[in-house]
Length: 448
Image 1 (tube, rainbow, N blue to C red):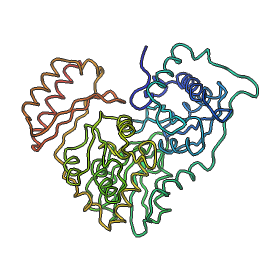
Image 2: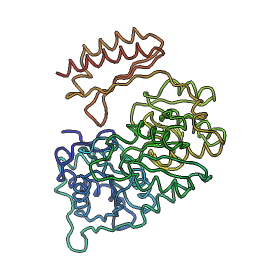
Image 3: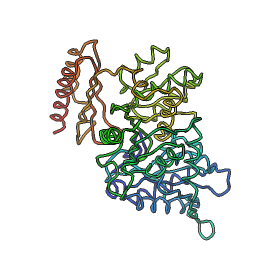
Image 4: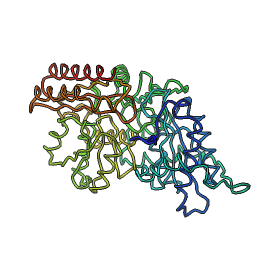
């Protein structure tokens, strides 16, 4: 049985791998399972999407599947992924679903479900959905007449979310000039509006989605775009979201890129000073720079490490009682405020630290000295074959010996794309580049 769910929902090329028929079946199975314990009588699911062209097609199929088992749909339209998680809780729905492929190219799309709590579904529920997809979705109830599900628009969905995220900070942003790159994605309304309503002067770029331009040479995966705008306009800070706004990368007033590691150091040390850092702990992934660990050690903040993927960060937060963590990519979880990574909340928290301390972002970023880190993404056709190759393993081990105790090497498959990510970290950037190139060449050779 082919596994449908990856580390971040069901992903694939829309209308080829992620077809309307699969979306329909996912809607039926998920609505049935999420509504079994409904306390509202008639189960309801929130559904939102990003701006990519295939969203309408998949939304229609999902809605048909959900309604076909007698569940109602609360449609919130184009909305950041974390907004759907929040609205699922705020509207007291039995679950939520977002249609997005985050930072992936426009031809991709994805379907991700939330439980009534706003948290991503646990593995066991995803496994149940897969089992129904492959063996029993046709046998689920198919009510008729008045028991068929209905679709209800939620006209104030954006108002609810924007008002909520503004309430997570206790200062206004008057006097600040902020550039926000919306990646032509789901943040194009919510992020500029929240910043303006908090008093900032806002310059919004890449905020005109047309269904095809999401993530195209913009957003958090192309931070040089917001960097240029910050320098051009003399802004105090730039922030760049990805397609579904669950992450953010910042740029300081001097044009330096401030990634998720820097943001976590800045925010966690500030939280500790306010006695608001539960367990005095930050949860990160193996991709985080060694500089983060060294920076937090100076403030006696404990660091816990997980596999790459926000779901693993979240699992560790819940397991340990910690409440703050994230990824170098800018996917950061403030568990005090939301149940998943939220790029807008993260941006507001970072800007609030600037306001509360009176320090520019460049000065705050000096809390962490970043060690050289070289990352290459190698496109492959068979991730499993490459990752089990003896030749690739030998090349990795040889280069680990070259690096010795002065750094580390990490080679891992992407959970959402046909890529092998090769990362080397240490003090000699030229050596790191040589190591990464050699491993990448071995991977390409073995993939043929």
